[in-house]
Length: 325
Ligand SMILES: NC(=O)c1ccc[n+]([C@@H]2O[C@H](COP(=O)([O-])OP(=O)(O)OC[C@H]3O[C@@H](n4cnc5c(N)ncnc54)[C@H](OP(=O)(O)O)[C@@H]3O)[C@@H](O)[C@H]2O)c1
Image 1: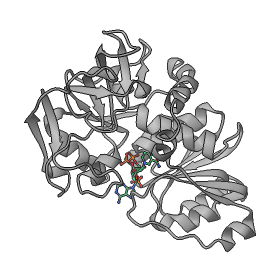
Image 2: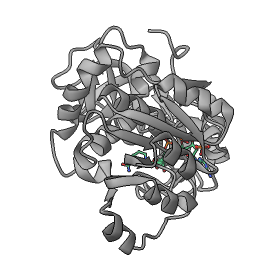
Image 3: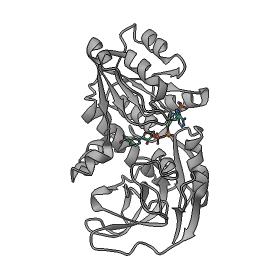
């Protein structure tokens, strides 16, 4: 089969298309013919050996896919599914643990399906379980035109929150609006804009996949008993928190480590999918899609994220033009 491998740790340009054996079918895995693979920031980090998961070289990256079941326990051959293999998804065929395979409604394309597992399950864990989001609350989302960001905007809106999006360009503002943000503010000076939009009160929840130098202003943007969700560090720096700020304003900084949570809790991913399915079927969770690249251009796809150009979810078309099916 055709697959993309990371063979050296010098960034997106080191990805290579290779011909390797298909995964050998085993009794415990679901074998999937991959149609579309989702591209995520962790793959950018993996291409430099900077992600917590460090498989021996060479390896096939690709954490999420959509396609058709070939064989495997509990899933009929021919079923359209999304899946979260973690690794191995940038390939024509992938073997996945049954707990990480999710049947797709007929109304959901393979492109949309491939955009769902990592980002939507992460923000569901973050907003609902860790952030305890309640209907009517206000949520500030950083990196709101990115994969995690657009998913957070959509899910928070679908759960009845008001969403203020933070982005770095006018192009990205359009993407955040398309995801359902009521207001979009520029990254520069976002704190003052938030104060104005909330009548000085601040927001109940901040979703932060960016980190870096925005962190302190994010804390200052929180209302009483507000929560800041630490999701990632695309801005590069891991921020420090002076805990007196938490005490003085009765606010919380909350870690969101989706992978660390579900790997220790069998069945959790299926529970999450079951909770999201009504919203997916109703079209309320419909990923905002960005550019699609052919499998052979996986390195260019990763560069879109690495060089901060991505608007919406970046995809790899493995078997057919993304969007069909
Ligand atoms: N905690 C978890 O369980 C979990 C799960 C999944 C992903 N993550 C993490 O979440 C983060 C976001 O992932 P993603 O797939 O949404 O990435 P993405 O699509 O590339 O979006 C990230 C956003 O970060 C902003 N950004 C600020 N500085 C940047 C820089 N120097 N380079 C690139 N982007 C920059 C960009 O928005 P602006 O240009 O508008 O600022 C961009 O849209 C990553 O750190 C990822 O590892 C965490």
